Length: 319
Length: 187
Image (cartoon, rainbow over all chains, first blue to last red; front, top):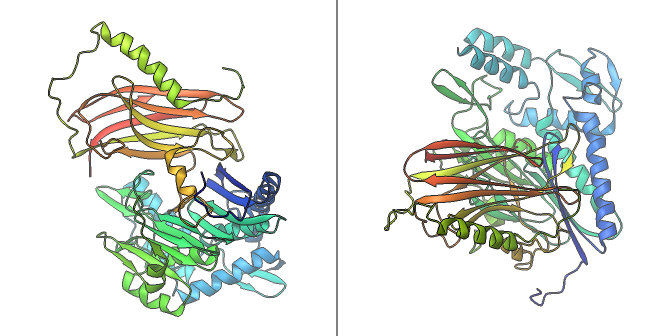
């Protein structure tokens, strides 16, 4: 079936994998031939494997975990790890700590509380916050030195960074026209044309219901944060699994946020930040980033978008 | 079932199942619903949770999965989801016509918060494919999974839809670890 427009490519490849970075991977590649599309997919998967070996928190021999076993020692690290460490510092400062790579320690406090069915004490939380306010690490051109024993998790940037790397690896293959990589909802488009992205409603846990809205992106990244699928129950109270690293308490005023940015690493960390800040704060802060679009779903279901997001939004008859 | 690749046509399967069911029902084994059947109560929804089997380690291709509802006579009433990758020949679904519409060469994708691998939550709101409310009564929840060089498996679970909440666990098979069905009031 062809509605008369000339397609700029000969072959379209779509594939889905499970158990990639602990979630699902969707690959779309348009290329001149099936062989080239498959070669691009192979390059993409190899790059995911390579970067996972650097950033994984599960694999004890990942570069990140091996680095975390050291303290007060300058360690020569790979360019990828160095870039993510520096980027994390930048966003931690920019967001006033709403993004914090040490936030896992707070999540652990609340998970333990859920097991004991007692909310954590102010003292417990204050103790963790104290450790999070210390300098975490220092990054130079050659090395990274860990300065604190707080366990660090960079997944909020690394996942997006891996999506970007995988997309680049596929796009670089000869004959490839465009690429879409989507890992667990963090996605990146590159190359020719554009792609329509359905934004899932963060308040819903059904995979087949209509999207909250749709945006069209080209050579950009999209990421979403949300609390609907996970959380902790303490007694009769359900708490979001998203803890505000600035206060140590579960976020209450935002259910989730979606972000459009020039790359997925940025979209990823900002989706985390805007899933923590008050919607008003987020809209104010995003003005400093003219290429970033944001959509926020507040706890009462109210949806707010900035101008950049509105310009990306598309409205189709069928949903 | 051996490892042969199946050129499966869902329509032909439904046709065969429909004939088999019709043969069963003529014997009066089916108690027909009240002549004027009540419509689906809009306060209720049917949640279908499908979990696919994961090999012990490493990534794996998602199998082709289709989830749909059939009425007591075996006619397809509503498709909840069909996940197909390219290269599956005739398994295109109506949704994929969007490939040709608009300016995009890529199929639309979805951004959401990270989800757990291999587990899908689908909700039936009681509407058929034409967005009309169906009658209360007997239905089949169908979950079909097939792997390109693997097996073909089907779960076909009879359910009764009225105004009483229930939960059913359908046993799994080689491709599908299990499916849990729940009729519940919408929250």
